[in-house]
Length: 294
Image: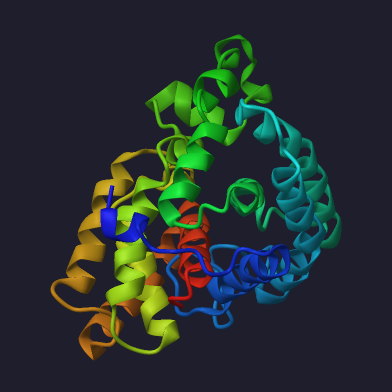
């Protein structure tokens, strides 16, 4: 794991700033454009059932959930931090119900609810101990999610095909652990690839976020992408496309921008999505914000 990133001090550690940063990170992600296979203000071809306004409506409902997650961490006294995850998961399910209600049944932020709920609770817990670095935060969330894959997928083989979630189906078929695996391992894609890119890329905020997204895509196996394509083989192909776009540059380079536009069109034509990468991008922006670096 990137020690330079893990050593960054957390400067936004009070509930109001943590929650504001979480909401802003979700909004930053959706307004950034153009993004291949994702909703933004100029395109939503891969997601015809939603648009940028759907995401805004969904995002603003998350505040009570993030506040509750932070509070649960702030008041948690058990030694087993896995119990803290157990406390916030029902809250997360309630947040999902609210999301589905305001979006007329559209899944805009299910992954973000999981990721940002964990981080809000972990930051609440750290507010007790006065430890304020990203390393402390990642160690805390890893303790919260220890054994998560085993516990969540323990009975997956006994379920019928209709009962399986998309994540369970990919675990059974391909052995992919998705966002749970990222969480249990301490979000290595975010720490090793997302954050260094966010901190070191050139350009305006939109260009920096786009470059960060592409680096996340290049170093992860997006479960949403695999689901849409129907095969994990798509991952290597997309990695190649991203590497061709970035090369030795970033999205402040006009040539890279033209290549990105072509990739966006290809994703539209093939109905592909990068929803898993979007969740990791939200977390990356959030970590940039709570450390005062973005």
